[in-house]
Length: 195
Image (cartoon, rainbow, N blue to C red; front, side, top):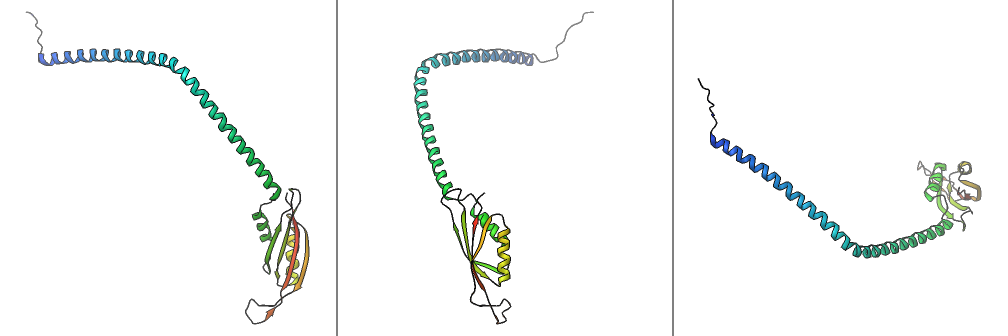
C-alpha cells in the first residue's frame, strides 16, 4: 500500500500567502536600499554644501561676533553706570532702611505717648549718623520718661536727648467724663546707629 500526501488547504490560499511573503521581502529590501541611497545623498550634500557655505558662514560668524562684542560692551557700560548710581545713592541713603527704624520706634512706644511729627535727617556721608527728631504728646511726665527710657534702651537709637517738654493744651479724658486732662508736649532728638 502506498502513502499519498493529501493537502486539505485550498491552493488559492497557499498562492496568496506565498505572494504576500515575496511582496514583503522585496518591499523591505527596496525600502532598505532607498534609505541607504538617501542617507548617502544627504551625507554627500552636507559635506559638499558645508564646505561651500563655510566661507560664507565664516563671514557671518565674524559679523555675529562683532555684534555680540558690541552688545557686551554696551551692557558693561550700563553695569558701570548702575554701579556709579548705586555708589551715589549709598552716600545719601543710610544703611538702616526706614521701615526698620519705624518698626523699632513702634516697638518702644507706650499707650500714653503719641508722636505727631517725625523727622529724619540723613547725614551727608555713609559714616556720618542720621538724626531722628520726634515731636508729640504724652499723658504725663512719667509716661514720657518711660518712653524715653525705652528709646534709650534700644540699640538702634543713640544719644537720646529731650529738647522740649512743656504742659500743653488739655484734652478730654478717655472716659469722656468731661474732665480735661493735661498733656505734655515734647520734642526728642536722637541719632541712629547705621551699623
